[in-house]
Image (cartoon, rainbow, N blue to C red):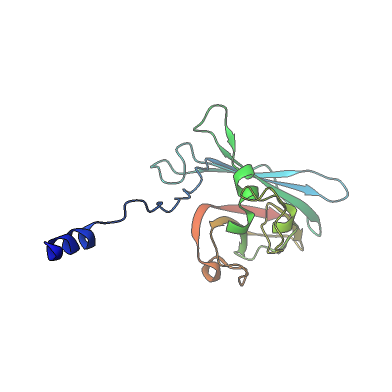
Length: 190
């Protein structure tokens, strides 16, 4: 009887374990990159619109509102929306609240004479978990600068990673994580 009781106690499992919280990736249908020239001039917008979100069969529609001016610094800002909901959800709020788990990356290609620099970091945002500003200063990239040089053509890729390694080497390949959204825009500097 004693042996049977021992077997019953050891075969029972602990069902009171709290399951690990799953943090689902954001649904992002629209990424709008607004480039405003410092000192005045024409604002340029880059828009990626994917009607069904990143994983659906519909390819994103990319638009660029105009050409960049040579030898100009632009203040950049990124707005992310989920238009599958009504009204559209501003995904930036979630990115800001989880700034320690997100980072935008900017990759220039094809001979485009452009450099980018982060203009924000985690400490600029309030953690949704604690209600206080983050104390870390790793870059986020919702705000950035883009500086043009001589006339040229090429591409600018903008990628948002979820849970990249921080700090990192500033590249998507070096940061790891999962891609929330990515878009490559063909640009001209004149």
